[in-house]
Image 1 (cartoon, each protein chain N blue to C red):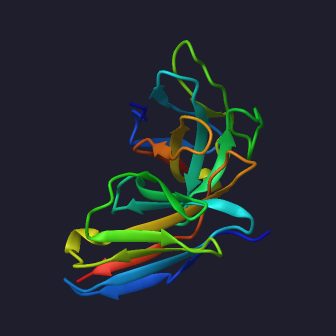
Image 2: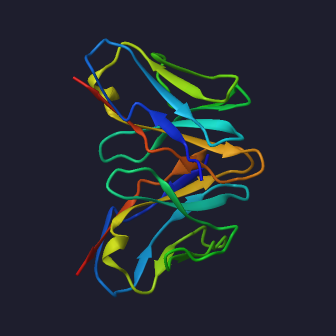
Length: 109
Length: 112
């Protein structure tokens, strides 16, 4: 069975501080990992996917297969980054997404 | 670019009534997913369709049913509504050539 764990329900930081949202997964095969962001109960928006190895809005995430982690990082948080962040896993192909419980990021001025 | 369209945006129903939510995927996307997100909860997968056939089934109650039509739009039918069905229902779609799932704005269902 596949599972995604986001240990922090809430992460509160000051503007300009570094941010790391943790995500660990359990899956026996080669998963595809994603980060989605949800602002004020709006739609889930794709932020990052591990296969593209890109940086969006200053966020990066590296898949660490040894530690089964896909932590989301940003060196300098901005107030507009405040949102709910979900880590998600897809086993492969056209399979569904399994979401973690989400981490609320609050960035204070 | 066109996104996933969901209708209605908000819906209020009484207990034991029925409700139908509609989803129009991104053009040329052939896979549709339905998710339910309760208050303060993470999205829970309900059901998915690929090429108009059910492809996967999650925690969808027996009172709910769904289908995908020839134009690839999908409808989620909910009967005998309960207070606990109050949630944000997301539809998402994926194309055959991509591995990214795109979500709609969601339909808010409130059961009173």
